[in-house]
Image 1 (spheres, helix red, strand yellow):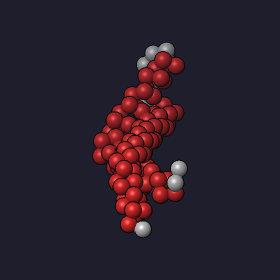
Image 2 (cartoon, one colour; image 1 turned 120 degrees about the horizontal axis):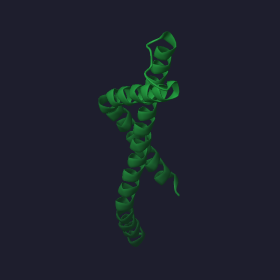
Image 3 (cartoon, one colour; image 1 turned 180 degrees about the horizontal axis):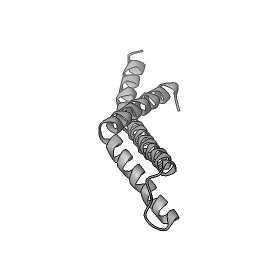
Image 4 (tube, one colour; image 1 turned 135 degrees about the horizontal axis):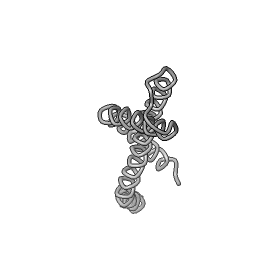
Length: 111
């Protein structure tokens, strides 16, 4: 793989990760909060064997579960954005390669 192609894929990866972070900031925080807190409550109710009383420990565990949910959705958004950005850069590079070959042939023929 040439250095130029590596740069193109790296730029695509970074742009995709940035777009993934933006999508997470716009659409992902609320679902991360909801699924993290709901999952924690379900887990705690199964561990306790019934309903959970709102004590200090339960609230602390709920906050940690909510933060884990937000972090997981953020990580997935950034990774998926990065993968899609790399794929788009790869496809763009494939379409650019034939044009480079034509330019190379033209410069060889003119010399």
